[in-house]
Image (cartoon, rainbow, N blue to C red; front, top):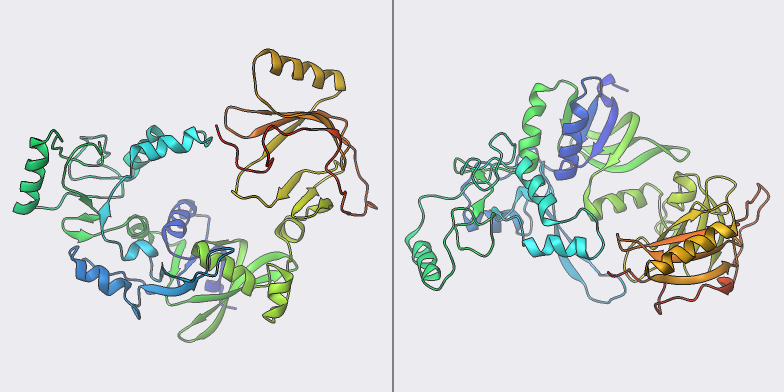
Length: 416
């Protein structure tokens, strides 16, 4: 194997995530980084933001996008989706509008329990990544890689529209991304009239970094494993099949459909699906086969307890209507400690989401309380330990006694 095909890190996918990761890893000159992109190495080029370019880039047969059929979970409806197929990923063919989004939406995320996901934090992130033609006005950083600009000269019809809104009390502004309650020209993902993007800004520096290489027109077909450890990838190029070796890590940045599909093609996934497709099974379960956790027990349908040491379980996974964290457990030394914690919670008016009780599987006595972040905290003691001869089993009923839930569905996404 050529020495060029042996690196420290292989990043599959040259879209936004892969570009950002390569930029960070490549900052250390000791890291040999290879970015593998299935599409071309050039995007639409420095074309002006004309509607025809967007149509051309997203049309059927376009070299910049891949069309695929998608069936949403638990439905019979089929939808057509697009995903980027070029260095830069899906932002390769955008409509070029640079919009920070609604301020209220960010605050709503934090109100729903996602601590730190608020308007102020996102404004800081946008400020750090934007370099705007308006300079530092409106909270912009003139030294940042992303470069949105306002088109010019303004067209007469838009000027009339903004003037009409001003006469009805909607103030005209220089930058719409500062306050959405105003009227302004939309910022574009262009600089000096030429198309730009976050990935392009990050990838621009690769030519000056000898430790970062980019291979385009190189489609990864499967991940190579030594047991359950990823050691490289096998890719299809214009010259045939090539293998690349990663001395440290293989990182998948191929998108929400590309990464799972590549895992399944490589033998990581549902055994029934892989067997039916004729794929050799490498890892049936991420937690057991890749993270090397052991299954302790389970309760049908869809609740599984895994451990990484002698404690009954380190993590539990359950099927739920909405993906979320249900609870985090703190194990106390004695029942008296649990009782005192229960009294303090009641005295301070904290909502007891699940009453005092004893679990059937790990025998722990505990109660649950909602924390400020929106998910639950379990306060308990007396959980059992298991040995190497433990046999996983369905433990049937959830509790020996107690543990009455305040809501009908204990695994529903908590709401504030």
